[in-house]
Image (cartoon, rainbow, N blue to C red; front, side, top):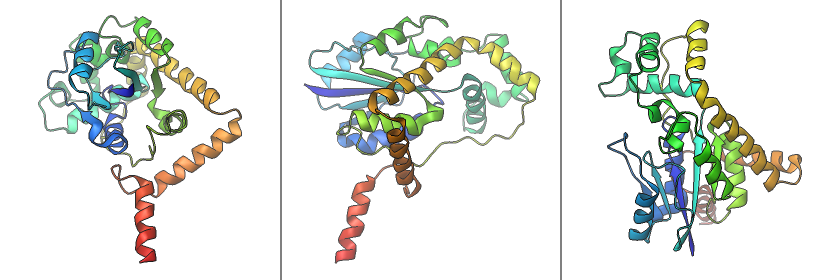
Length: 272
């Protein structure tokens, strides 16, 4: 029975970089599904049908996935991972991403961030699963329903991490699944330029509006700490592994070619 991984791609939580890393680590077994209908997420049965009909599949990324997945699928060991982000920082990043993108949206028609925030969050012109990472992860059930996330984590086949601590999470994934995640070193991509400064009043109002998203972010931080303790007996060992991981990233030029193959090619050229 082979492993089958699902990257539950929470928008504006490091997904663009992760998609490139999965392409490198899974090769032809990786499928990056670009959602055209972001308002609909796959059900557990939908994912079951995908897994059953595509036996070549080893990893899939999609905005349509949630953590409600068929972990009991008989033909493969289903695993999932998702990254979440500080709710305030994520919302601000989403605004600037859409404002700079070549699409018609509320971020462009609003005169500034404050008007955009009031239109979406106070007047309610935003889908719950777009506004809330928790609602995205729990199949759109509710803004405060943690049950889907907690049940997924209880299977020990789902992993939830804070994207701000991506390096630490990557070290844990490489340690737990060395044959699957051989090299997660990376070059950061898809960072939206921020052209406005937000005052403290606006930031505090935004944090108040997004308070329902804090529990899932805090849970992600707790899960990372649990994974570190599981993978490393001593924190000193973890710190050494983290420094090694960051050193690999410091010499990486792109996110596609495996770094160990790059090194091998250079060695072969030098020998020739």
